[in-house]
Image (cartoon, rainbow, N blue to C red; front, side, top):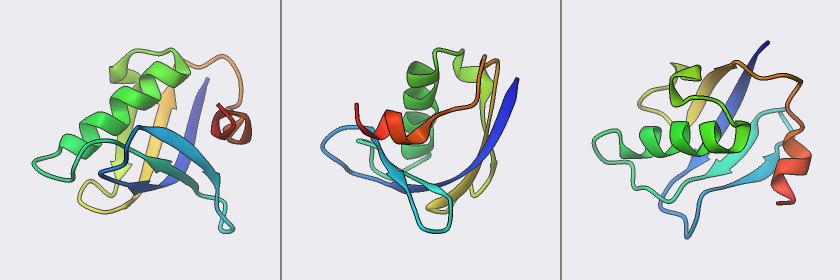
Length: 89
């Protein structure tokens, strides 16, 4: 199964975590890394792969490589992602 989701990334956070869904339906995620030389994108992919329990290669940035707003595609998941429950962790 695969899921495509719009994400707003907040960088330089104390720790990486899902904040929750925004009014426009996108998901806000904070990452610990700074947006320098692709480190925040790497941190986002690593964090999502850990949370979704998939290989890092299964988390792809489809668009927004140089933007806070991104479209991510996650493959290899077994069910639809419940972003609200991830935000409570």
